[in-house]
Structure formats: structure tokens, C-alpha cells
Image 1 (spheres, rainbow, N blue to C red):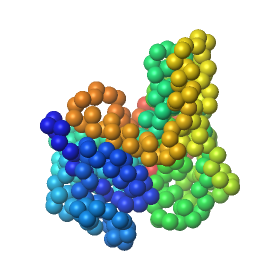
Image 2: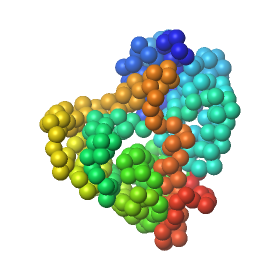
Image 3: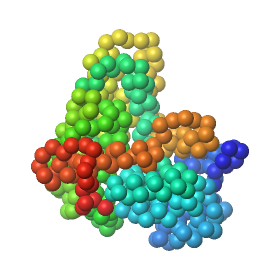
Image 4: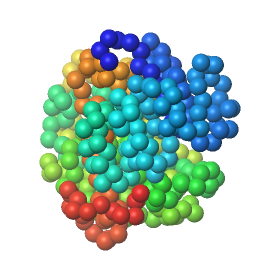
Length: 355
């Protein structure tokens, strides 16, 4: 796709996250052309007010065969990712998948190998990487302004009441979803590894405090990274009465950065041993995303995705292969809960209950 034509897109899944992707694609209307959508629940597609040229399907196999798109975005429940992506590989050039890519490490490995053989590009949605404060912190890290990394912390203190879990049978299950660390905190884990590097070992405790679900609604963990730094994870959907934060803190020998807000979108601490003139600009202009934090992240994600597909950008764009790192950490965390002790990485075997 080097002739700069619009990339035709289909979407599978018209649930909670659909509007974010729909808006992001529309915001990049000069680069993408949404030609069809699909959901096994016909009511979801019928109730959407879309351009009449956008076709609606109930079966994604029929949709892809009929429309022959360049790219498909998969927005269904996590437990369904594997089978759908497996059927798409080789039929489209690009597949974009909401997090997590799959629930099983073995499934990710299988799909990555299939994609290599068919030259299919597999990407995972990691929209928080494009939040303005996150980009500023990444630049500071690259310049060495944080010095030696010492401590990385993520805090996901969100509120999900029982009706949230009751809306769909897959939520809070091992087969279709996973708990707070797999669903709500996976983006934050991705950022933690991006800043701190690979994990060496982890120990965790999980509880199901308030939700009537199979998996955990609260989890805390300790991590030792390969570079000698340590980290902590605090994730819960049992915050009451409402959401508090989704944040990350990075402490180094020469500086400290803390990004808070609801979804790592607000720069709260920006301190370094050596200040530079650009710090004033960063504090003023990168302290917070525009009001619609989700829409902003997805819009930037698709904008960058286009350049990657067209070959105009050599980037560490979140691929399926790279997403394995955070998924392996999730499996290690669950294994740690199971044995009540530290688990070393890389893993010798995955946590078999997830997926």
C-alpha cells in the first residue's frame, strides 16, 4: 500500500469501545475509509447511525469475503480474539486487535508465526502510549534525564459495580476476560514495561472483594526488573464509590516523573536534577490531553498506524509480537498468586486457566 490511497477498514464488534475506533477512523478520514461493520448481535448494528455506504454484517467471514478490506479492527471480547484473528490472517493485509491480543501465550505465538508466513501485519491497540505526558516522559527517558531507574509504580483504582460484569457473560471469567490485571490494568502494565524494561521476577496477591466474578477484582504485586530496578502494581475495580486514578510513577537517580489522571493522561510530577528550558514548555503543553482522553489516544494511534503501514515511519509500534511481553507478565502474576511466591521470567509454562 505505497500509493497513498485510503486504507479500507472493517470493524468486528460494536460494543463498548466501538465509538472510540469509529471516531478515530473518521478523524483520519483522509487516510482510512470505513466500509463495513459486523456484530453477531444485529441490534447493535441496527441502532448505529452510520453513513449509508457503510455495510452491516452479522458474520465477519462473509463481511471480509464480500468487502475485501485492507484492514480489519477486532473489538470483541478478549476470549474471541484468537479464533477471529486466526481466520483473518492471510485474508487481509493488516489486523488490529484491542488489548489483550490473546489470553494465551501459546495462541499469540501461533498467530505471530502464521502472520509471518502470510505477510499479514498484526497490531495491538495501546492508545495510552500516545498520551501527551507519556510521550514527554518517554523522551526524557531516551535523553537519560532520569538517570538510573530505581522504582516504577502503576496504580489503577477504578470502580466497576456488579451491573458492569452482568452486562456480558464473558466479563470476569477466566475463559473470556481475566480479572483486573488482564482487562483494566493491561495498558498500564504495557507502559510499566516500556519504561522500566523486562521483568525478572514477580510476586502477587489477588482478591475478589466486591464483585461476584471468577477472577480477581483487586491485585497487588512486586516486580524486580532485569536492570535491577523494582516496581509495584496496585490494581482494583473495587474502588468505591467511583474511579480515582490510573497512573504511573517512574523514579530515577536524576529525576522523577508521575503521570496520573483517570487514564495516565495528566502530568503531575516533572522534576530533574538538571532543568532545561523545554521543561517549561512540557509542563504547560503536555500536562494533560484534551478532555476526551480516550478519543485522543485512539485518534493518535490510527494516525501513527497509517504511517507505519505506508512505510513512512520506522517505529516501535505495538505489534502482536511485542504485546507478548505484557501478556507473559500477566501469566507470571497469576502463577505467582497460585503458588504464593515469586515466579521467574521468562516463564516455563503459561497459566492454564486464563483463556
